Amino acid sequence: MPETRPVPVTVPSLAARKRRSGAEPIVMVTAYDAPGARVADAAGVDVILVGDSVANNVLGYEDTLQVTVDDMVHHTAAVARARPGALVVADLPWLSYHLDAADTVRNAARLVRAGAQAVKLEGGRVRVPMIEALVSAEIPVMGHLGLTPQSVHAMGGYRVQGTSHGAAEGLVADAKAIVSAGCFALVVEGVPGPLGDRVTETVDVPVIGIGAGPGCDGQVLVFHDVLGLGDRTPPRFVRRYADLGDEAVAALSRFAADVRAGSFPDDSETYH
Ligand code: KIV
Image (cartoon, rainbow, N blue to C red; front, top):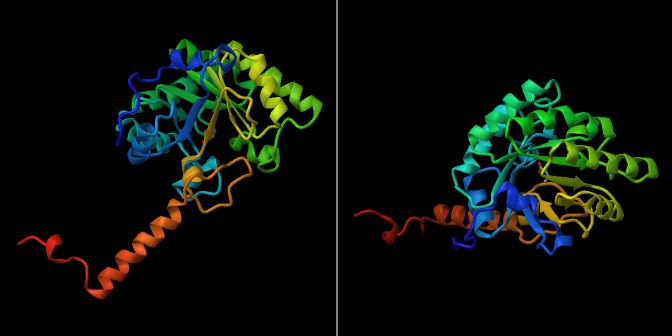
């Protein structure tokens, strides 16, 4: 695969990437294993997110609530073994940062020891003590606001957030609070474009959108959605760039046909 990145992406270099200061938009994609990380890195993405969406995309779960810290350590280590030049950010899974600050730091430290350079967590003002504890333990934190999949039951489903005046104001207040607590970047998911713009204008750290319109400082998508490897109908904000799922089925069907016809392996594929 081609070498595309002369300098590795770091937390400080990413934290400085505001479009209003002339920076290029940030590109972030999920990856859950070493081959995925190699593909993402060769494509020159800035950030690889070891997302807890590993639940739906790899582990066959219905939602992200099933993922454990052990699962995230396993997948983060696999991504890190690819030694990407992209920044590796790992999701803290549900209930790994909700109980107390000490528990949060211990769980995040496991992800750092597995190879994450930063962790991501979902939620607003209520997470401030946990974010402060992580930052004092030298663990960089990316926030995640808006449609936060770990709150699926509290939200009553995967619904666009911040659609009322009050909810939009609450989301902007959350963004300010978690940035003051020390987040070096934010993901904002599933909000109307104008609210994505407003959060991006309000905070001094980069805002990476997913279903938050084109005005953010960067965009993130799920690997399996971009490449057409998923089995779900993707949400409206996904743009699919390949149909690798269909190509994989076609390739394996040709392999099966060759085996059944006795034409695989041939002489050149046989040791003599
Ligand atoms: O886990 C995930 O996939 C995410 C998204 C922001 C892409 O958190």
